[in-house]
Image (cartoon, rainbow, N blue to C red; front, side, top):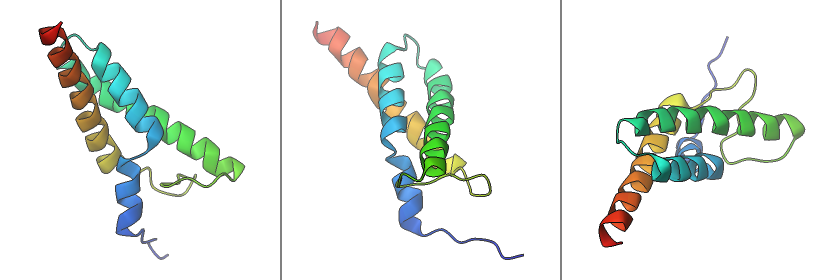
Length: 99
């Protein structure tokens, strides 16, 4: 059995998954405590994997595809979700300070 090798750019594209970014930013914006950003990142990861899997199953090309035997790119998606959620949280805190 050979282990599939995925190019580095696929791992990077997993961090810039539009579904992941949208969910993490919006939910990070709505978080009232920074600790909730960890949950935001896990939810953004789960939804982005499900959407990526569904689109790949239908045959629609996606930057970081997920299949039944392929990787979910967990570490990079979770870390990216945490960073995008943190950005949304900090943007909301800055907005509240200025308002």
